[in-house]
Each structure stands twice: as structure tokens, then as C-alpha cells.
Length: 163
Ligand code: S3P
Image 1 (cartoon, rainbow, N blue to C red):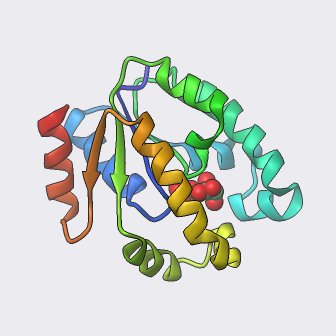
Image 2: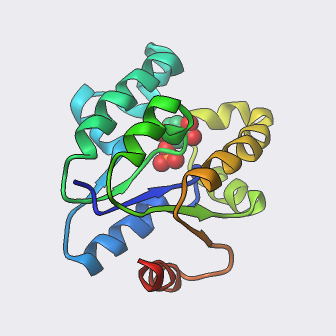
């Protein structure tokens, strides 16, 4: 079973922090998006372009069911905790769910540097999604960490203190 689950908006640092946490806990890190790419042999961008977001969400649930059973630090995709079914899957595991909360300004800067985010093409929607999703993350999480102006090491330390 997963030992720790990271949730938060895209660009909140789930992959980076997950990698560092996994090192500290001496278990592998599993990135849900990476698993989707591996299982479907397609990039996230190509999946969005070719089959659309709705189908991507189905692939995401399939991947989540697999990921949750592994002894890992699990970094989820920003949209993964939105579906009720996925929330149930995430809560079924006896592992702390950690919400990495970054200000929208910080998120915007980070995702602008990485044009591979498929949802970036709809930037106007992004803030609305951010506001809505942060409520869901907060509700679901056992631990919430604000990440703005904190180094990755400091964020990891803050999580491990509460772990
Ligand atoms: C998404 C976030 C992405 C990825 C996909 C959709 C979202 O993951 O799953 O582009 O809906 O917020 P990251 O949060 O790891 O960027």
C-alpha cells in the first residue's frame, strides 16, 4: 500500500517533493502521470489531444487503482482527487494525504516555464479550476503544507515532522 500520497494543483511541486520524500523514507516514488504514460505508451499531452480529457480521466482512475497498492510515495496528477471515485480510492489507504498548497502566482510562474501542461492552453479556466480544486484538496488532506518561498528541503522537513 502507498505510504504517503501527495495531492495539489499542477505545478505545486508534487513530483519534486515526492522524489525527495521517497529518498528520505527509502521507498520508491511513483508518479501517477508517469504510470499513465508507461501503461498507455503515450505522453499526457498526446492523450489529451487524441482521446480528450474525459478518456484521460478513465485512464487515471485505472492507474490510481494500481498505484495505490504499491509500497511507494505517490505523487498524483492535479486533477486526480477531483472525481468522487478517486477520492474513495485515495481514502481507502492508510497513508497520510498531503496537500501541497502554492499560491496561484507561484503556480502560474512554474507552469509558464513548462509548456508541456495540456491544460495550460486554457489559461483563463485555470484560476477557476485552482479555486475549486483547492477546496477539494483541503477537504481530502490529512496534512496541508504551504510551499511558497520554501525550499524543497524545508517542505520535506515540514511534512516529515507531521508524518
Ligand atoms: C492535470 C494535472 C497534470 C496531469 C494532466 C492534468 C490536472 O498533472 O495529470 O495534465 O487536471 O490538473 P500534474 O499536476 O502532475 O502536473
